[in-house]
Length: 195
Figure 1 (spheres, rainbow, N blue to C red):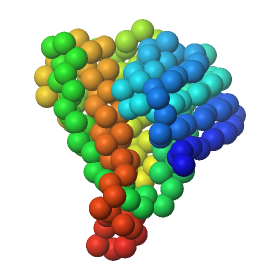
Figure 2 (figure 1 turned 180 degrees about the vertical axis):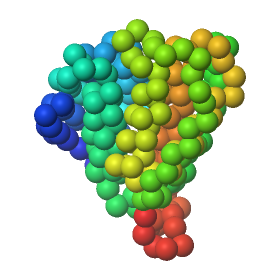
Figure 3 (figure 1 turned 90 degrees about the horizontal axis):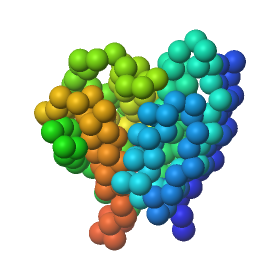
């Protein structure tokens, strides 16, 4: 049975429609109004082998903050709903991904507890129409709405596009692994008996 979710989130700042499938094939249909963010989310979808359909209309006349943060909120909510009771999943995922000269590590735990460690300061303020400080805000929103620990460390890199793309790809692979089913795990992988 496929693990899917549908999220609709409308505020005075954004209007988001999102469909997410943890057990997809890497299909993306994404329109956020921010080309670079579309590219990162398409990369996330492809490399995590998820399916993601996303349309966001945001107040980009202000800046990209509300759009990026609210998409993070919606995606985190979708991940949490699609993962369901988390019975039988591996729970943890950790990946190091190269992107040319860049190298990024993302390690995560679908613990039910939100926490973000983001260990990097970008040298430039923008890539296209995307503010680089929003990478941290995006993953903070995902962490808190999905209820997951996310640790992000940039090990090497000089090209900001490559660094951010390595982060999104590493997040995708880590999430894909963490949500895999292991037949040896009968209930949830926790001494508490609940995630």
